Length: 123
Image (cartoon, rainbow, N blue to C red):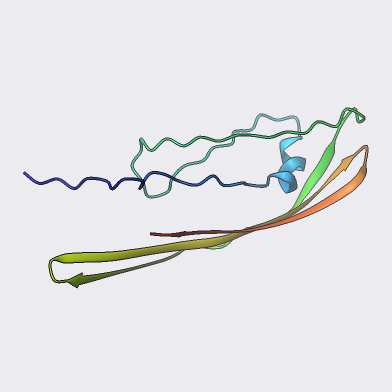
């Protein structure tokens, strides 16, 4: 019986930097927070790794802040398929834009950050 096999390199995903600075006001509110990432519309056993980079303000006894705005656009997804003889060619494209703005009060003063990220995938 014939079964499809994943091609070489199909699970070789690039690293992405996700800027969390605008969310520091929320993350520093004294509560417990859970950061999680997943591959949407994928099998439940697709494991991914993440690294969290933190810089501490040793000159301040307490850092405060606020998330001013956060917007995640809907996922734009397109796909095409074409038969060329006995070969089927397919192309999938997905993209979305995420933007957020927040401020942090630290020993360096009030720092405002505005982050916009365009995420895209083509296969």
